[in-house]
Figure 1 (cartoon, each protein chain N blue to C red):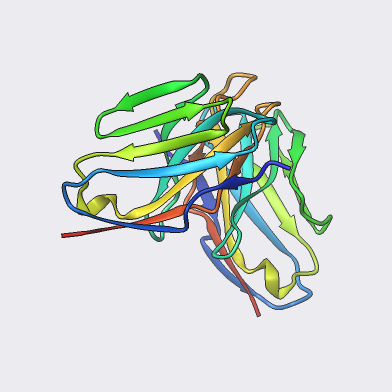
Figure 2: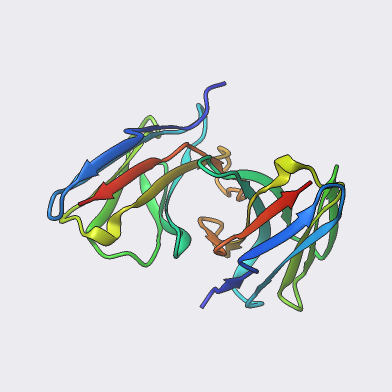
Length: 110
Length: 115
């Protein structure tokens, strides 16, 4: 199978740092993606890792370890507007489909 | 540049009916994917089309079908609707290369309620 697991919910406070973990079966994926989805809106692309290591993009960073089947999304200097669902997704080998985890709902409080 | 457009945005159907949803991708995008989103299961892949050909299909029953036209617009159809088909149906398009990078651009979705 191509299961992707991530925590259901997380909470944090403004200005803090939060790490959202994602684990998956090591075979079957050709890249790991993170999407953000605010309530009632469409998902939007955040980051993409195809090689091991850390990709940094402003306040958001994403890490991938292919041998461990592990990725995380790191959000720094949290803002209220970061309250959203964060979706981890693997790209299938053919590059024709993204397989999503069920998402992690992050609530940021003041 | 216009984004992905889905119609209708909301619709209500009864069990046993059928429904057709439409998606217009970003201009120049040739790959269109469809996803079903429910609170319990999250985003689940339905199928993907590229240049009018279905390249991949998820684990959904045959009641779910789709097609893509020469202008890259896509439709999906669900026949013999069941209560469990109530969901947000999201369409996404991606870059015009033959090998998509996986960065998808999603539409706002069509919210289907089956009574």
